[in-house]
Amino acid sequence: MAQTTLYQVQPTPATKVATRASRWRLGLLGLSVLLVVMFLLSIGVGSVYIPPGEVLKILLGAEPERAAWANIVLKFRLPKAITASLAGASLAIAGLQMQTLFRNPLAGPFILGISSGASLGVALVVLGAGAGGGVTLLAGLGLLGEFSLAVAASLGAALVLLLVMLVARRVNSTMTLLLLGLMFGYATSALVSVLLYFSIAERIQAYITWTFGTFGDVTWDQLRVMAPSLLLAMAVAHAGAKPLNALLLGETYARSMGLTVGRARLFIIGSASILAGVVTAFCGPITFLGVAVPHLGRSLFNTSDHRILLPATTLLGAVLALGADLIAHLPGSQISLPLNAITALIGAPVVVWVILRRGNLGKTFAA
Image (cartoon, rainbow, N blue to C red; front, side):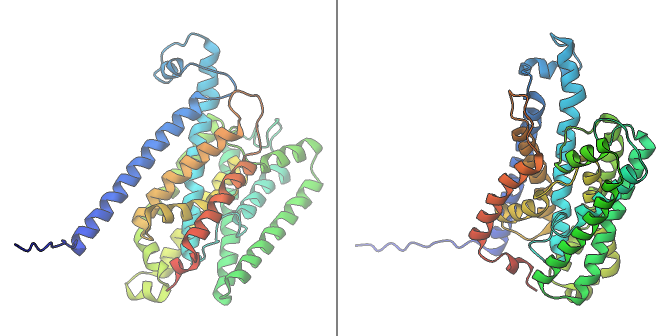
């Protein structure tokens, strides 16, 4: 009886790398398709039903069956969808940058007080200077005022981020750093409260509504300031993938690889501040996306390589922001729920699931 020996071919390291790269490309392609679907859903679904064919005609520049549909799509839904995509991607990137910079899995624009710093910048411009005058907080600012608002919010975010970084040099405990971040957030919130105390009732109500977070109040004029600022900061962030990979293993290792740590840190802080600050200025302090999306990206792609994580978190952040906005507006009804409530209701279970699945999030940042 002839004996047959079966040989199992083991994949070579080169084959494993090629397979992993192929999976990453497929994953990014799938997220891109999902983003297009969510973007079209965001434009096509709302309190007023518009047939998909009519939505397509409007987007292609043709005349719809009813003129009011063109106004709804072009003046409200399209800028809202663009804003949600940009804001979600920006907060996700800023969260990823901070988690790597601080080597802390719980770092994020809201938790470390960065969003509070941006809120203080907004309050100083809008409440302190007595700007605005419409129903929403940012109404009536004008192009120069909106540009000043974006700068003030970015400076406020950068100031708090720099303070947290200075403290982080003296404190090794993650828990202590997070508590100090909360204290910075409380301090900036206290300054905002003082400004609110001396403001008129309409401004106070508009500010409180702004803190709930929304993508729907951003106009085309405001997008002219918001979009270029965020796209520029995103480009800087994506160009910093290799420095982020080096910093993930610690500053000593990064220096040994020839990285100028101080300059890399400056670019990371600058881009993260603009991303978190500009989004906060125009959409309010949006919670949870910044801390949750980077963990989702790591879990889905099973990598800590920022050359993959940066595009992955960009797409994931945009998809989740569009999804949260769709739920918040309860399609078919006139009700709009607070956006921050939806991001927390969606984000909290996801983060709990990721934590339980991965066990120890901190090992990703271990030197």
